[in-house]
Image 1 (cartoon, rainbow, N blue to C red):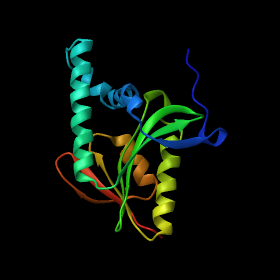
Image 2: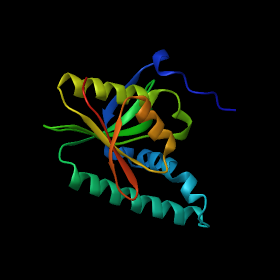
Image 3: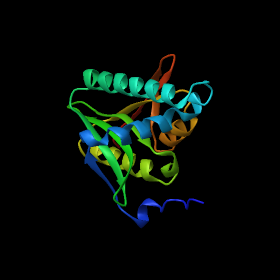
Length: 166
């Protein structure tokens, strides 16, 4: 049986830039965000992986087109790669484009710690931290509300949220 990961205060959470050799890791992280959804589809493993690769590539292209200055980082927990963080530190705002952790590292406080760091950094500069969260992702929505984010808008699929400096 797998033991639960240590809490962030017990070890180091850090970031490093995404590198070309991270392709498999990024696919694994992305697959973890789509696992529940894809469990409903009667595809074989090869078809599921091809779909995930296509979707991840399209999403990454979209982020790079839409977000100038996108910082793409691997999240490290005690030196082990456990997630991905995409952030834009813009002139008018900070934008949390995406944060995702491998399933076994969720609910360990890692994401909360990283979001708090971004909130503090943006706050020191007098900038809001903005993000969007998929409507069905109740767990993420609760986290952002608990951290003081307010809903500023919505579309068919996402809520737009913002944290303003105090």
